[in-house]
Length: 341
Ligand SMILES: [Zn+2]
Image (cartoon, rainbow, N blue to C red):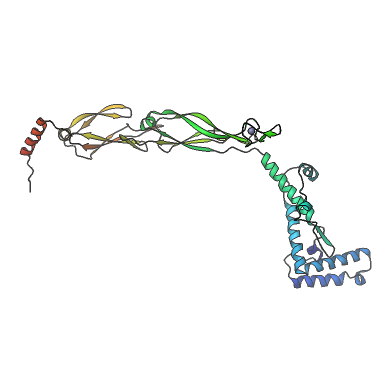
């Protein structure tokens, strides 16, 4: 872009055709060699004014010129990605042969002496974007994070445990280093893929009192980085398997406690297995079905927090009663004060 026609006509870029015409007429009168003198600089200036008007007054030519100008201004304003000179960049990159591609034959827009080398312009843009891509490809890149799940029992959640996790990981091929070829032949290690998938075993310590849904992060155990970039992280989501005896909600543990009718009536002391061993639970006389008993501090632990165990009483009729027991129930019926309607 050698000439700025807007500057030559001293008008802003958004000028209307009338404004362009007006500016041209004013300048053409002022710089006419008959008026301003028949000197070489005056003639040059007068020619430039005519050239600018010829392009800007023709809508097609003006559109072409505006596009070229925008590209040019953009290229000028684009920050350089490094300190290398353009010649060095040219050496490092291959410029496309537009003539062979056939879709970009030598096309110089020529109007009124204005000439814009589209081929060189496009080739330059291509070299720049390719150089930028190459630099990006060479830059260190952090590996991807990997996410997986691990299932543990309620007891493991309470006590803490160690789990072995096998993870399929994709790594850059150790033989060809991702180049896919070795000594001109396809790499035998990765079969020309440049990367290999292999299982890696991790031994993961699961802290005691972990809540279902908690995530454990293993730093830099994810996919390997590229060009010296850091590896990603491995995230394990811990799921606590529901247990028929225990259910957990946060740090609290829920359990159903079945008792016999006489225990509900008379009260009892019942051994209950909790997460931290057996405890004796006192059942008060006249305990009702569905009644809840809270065992403080018998739930899950996390840091300084400890949950409770909540027992729900379920009065269960024994499946098999001895004859003696049946007799006693009959006696109970006789003694019953309940009025049957
Ligand atoms: Zn390989």
